[in-house]
Image (cartoon, rainbow, N blue to C red; front, side):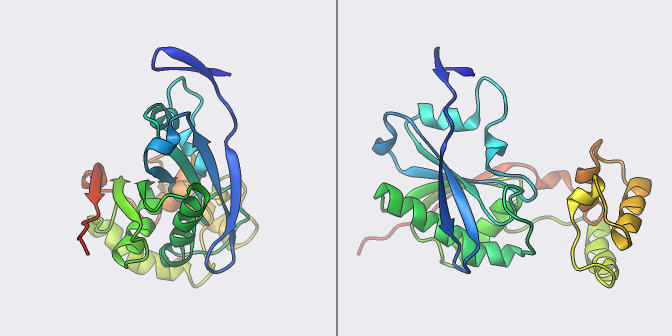
Length: 237
């Protein structure tokens, strides 16, 4: 398959997959894409949200975000962190990703490229966890962060706050976690009951996998949306 970018046609090539261990030993991976001029600029690490995977940024269209970066001579690294559906199912928190995944991923990119710094483009809960890591001082090598959808301070509507405080604790008495894939195939027992409740009360998405997490977070304020850019301040000495 070929993609038409910048007035020329370039074949789509599979990215190089680099496996590495998070700080707690969980196996993660990076998908590496580079153009001819990639060594001229800082590497860019791109981080997906929860319940998707690295190829989120490579949809089947002619022009993708990844290839736009390659055309700009960036060395592109797509991270599959512990929330990726490409990895075995695991229980995780944003703190787990902030402490264990993102610092290890950044260090892997720097080790592989020989660069001393890099930039980051981060999305959704990948953005939230990456920002936690950054403000905790765990990512000093990251010079610029472009954050999409949500970062450190989401504006939580009243109903969403009530759901997170009460519905989550109530559901937590019966199941240890929620799996969005229950929307497609729920195991017998409480997962089946929860799936029935979600289908009966939530129709925000036309996808049952989407509605499962929405059931404990909606409504979503439109003020969540948007993209922000942070540049890490640098001092001499």
